[in-house]
Image (cartoon, rainbow, N blue to C red):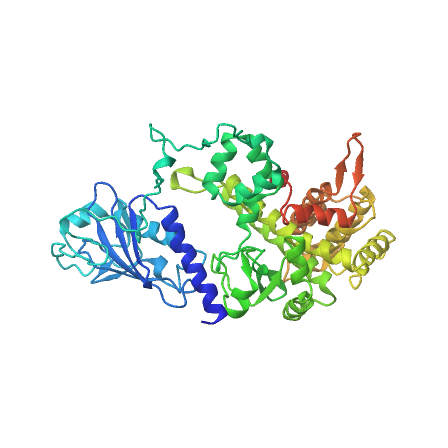
Length: 551
């Protein structure tokens, strides 16, 4: 078995173990230890007739979905013989390796037992009432369905007797097996037989032991523990336990301690884009994963710092990744120029989404089932600030190791303040606002005013050009000192630039606010780039609490 096949098998076993350890109501999975390529799936929600399906895993799972067939007779518009027509089983359209086996099984449960069934094509396009369809007794072809007589000799489905207990089934009893482990009332006992034994209290345990306990709890149990005792909550917040668990490859479901993690990057013209779904280099390079969870294709992979040990692993080959991206996006210069462009694109995307939501929000109708624009913009802001801080963390890591990066940023800003606004030196004003984040130069009203004036100046050609806003009349200057018409038209023509500058500046303020630290005496200390970088290492690249709300 090759290393790549071992990664895929490990992911499959993890999915199977999840269903075994945390079974879902109405779902039973029978696994044969001698044949992990096939499994019986029984869907049996309360008050409904159980259904038997078979899952077949190819060696490429989870890169491709499991092949699921149905053996039970069922009246359903999307069942054709033993085949099931459902989007999630289509590797081209609806499937992503980010789906877990448990998630797929829950989708199947909903597919067969929801009150309404969505249809994409044909005369039944729209939604079909499940009960009404079952009243016809027809399958997807329109043929009458025979009575279900299927029996399975592997899992016992369809037998006249009740389902036998099996250690291969997901529905396993997790009750203690030792007689001495139960008290007379059935509760588990932790009392030692030694009368001199003094139990250790959680409050007396060092944090190292509490961390070990947390490592052995799943997310649900961890949240319950935090609710039961705030000591667990403090440890969770201090060590970002939930955040750490979320930072895993969406294909192989392993974290940064085991794999080199980063993001897939797509180049469209000069635009550098990413959904910022965490992906391992193994999945990208060896398994050829080329689509994000939402289906955005990408051609490049860029590592993220995340943690100090992880950064030490991925930094050596990082320049090769930057070269590939800079060449494809036609970005001249070193790695920092690529990051400036990338961070700028994150804000451009947020600005465009805000503009679109502003336009759609005027016609918002909650009765049509639309999502409120404010909540949608909040989600977009959270995504943007998360992405921005990941890239800012990467920029900080490079700036701390390559002093020429902050030195150039300082010199560029000082030159701009002195009046050097040449596009050769400052090709993008957005980049200038990002440089401020790693610069020692103070931001003054004069600097902000100079940036706005330069933005207006650079917009002139586009305002006059027919391919732009086609406002050729503005080329003729009025004799009056102030022209209300010119002011209004200039503002209207520049709204896109102003909106982008506004978002860039707000993002700068949010990030810049993290660079000051309140000391014990109440005074504010400005953090060095290294201190700011280490803070982000502690948070695994995440923005501080409340950053999205500020944005």
